[in-house]
Length: 573
Ligand code: DGT
Ligand code: CA
Ligand code: CA
Image (cartoon, helix red, strand yellow):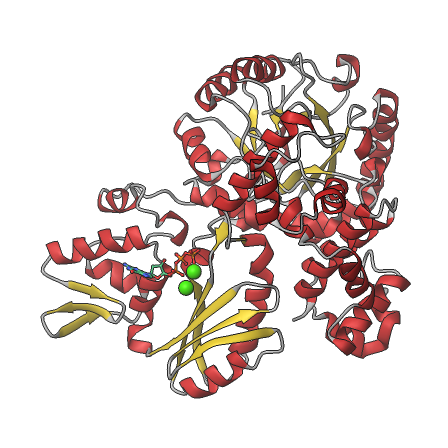
């Protein structure tokens, strides 16, 4: 499937256009990229059906972008992109990953200092060549250095969200072979880690050669690192690697257990086997020469005296002890989710109308959706003011009446995502907030405050009787930005006192992260898993938030949007 490759290029074009100072257009490219990544069908197949005309039926794809896609499908290249690359030959994606480095800065640094990549940037920062430039200064230079160090720590790893769709597609294609008896992803991908080094796929088949041949000849393979009888390794064109192994049916469970990892979890399980006079390997569980388990993962765990341990828990963070003591959690599942309360509509520049968002939520089987557009302080996001929020409230009431008339059991809730200002007040008046079903508040500015000041700021907001949910509570963005200076234990304590719900944001923030989710659960602080969707396709990001929640040992009762609406509403102040 070429969707991801094309999405990646469209995103890069957007960055280049931003550098060129083109207004609006970059946004269009970004939106098309989001649509493409969320698409279940291969763009190639869509194109075959009716050329650029059918491509234009993809949300966010206009004539122009449809032609670029056609260009790629026909020639493996997008001409505009090649031209832009020639004109500005730097690694834009790499450079803008550095916090504080927007496309405009990238361009200036290229023009003034010839900086083309991360290495050049680091050299220039260390030689203090950046601070003297107009519009930069000492502080920016220091921030850039911090940003570089953060990016370097994540180098060579991919966001789960970036690669999962491609891997799912590869799995689907291999599964089509009639020779394939079983197939599963393994490794960090199966454990839903936020970043992935490489993807691992495990297959049971009596005809390994056939599987290998198909695997290395998939259309989106860039390079084959190696191909043996039962193991092959490839580089996908989007940039990440996949390892595939073919195993025998009798060892499938043991191999799955081994290749799911984590390494640390495996070390402990192997030791437990040894303590019981057994040997656990990727081939099975053995007592002396006799194989006593291996076909299924459950069987493998059972043979060494453990219940099945969910992949997301396998990090050697106490899951084995919990298993031995019968204390494993019953993890929340995607199907438990009944609604999404952090969603943006066209009112704040999102891609879809309130009704379109609601329809998509219905298609997901939800009972409710909450519209929470940005508020006025965020001017770049077309934040709404009090008056607009009240107008929106009227519209949402109308939509609900319409649904009622149509006898559809679905509710649109009205919220907003207001901004926590530096002094801890928010940018919308209480009289307006009181009219909404619920209120989300988040920090979107002055992220680099000292800890004491930042905590006072957040505490004041959490104590505001109109604020129900703290959005992306720590401010981190995976692979891009660390959390702000906070004292998470204190946040938990205040949440407990005030009943403030902490968000698990499913976008690339993945915030709260697993360790904090687990802490919140232990303190009985309630959480909500939201997508922060700015267009309807992004409602599907829920899967990633749920993955993070599961890694944090969260159960259904820890997450309030697993509740039917009447019970959910009780949690709002
Ligand atoms: P990644 O790819 O860095 O995101 O993380 P993983 O966990 O997918 O690691 P990977 O791909 O190197 O290996 C997949 C699994 O195979 C890993 O989770 C556990 C198992 N494994 C690999 N190497 C070793 C090893 O040296 N010892 C043990 N016990 N297990 C290993
Ligand atoms: Ca891996
Ligand atoms: Ca691997």
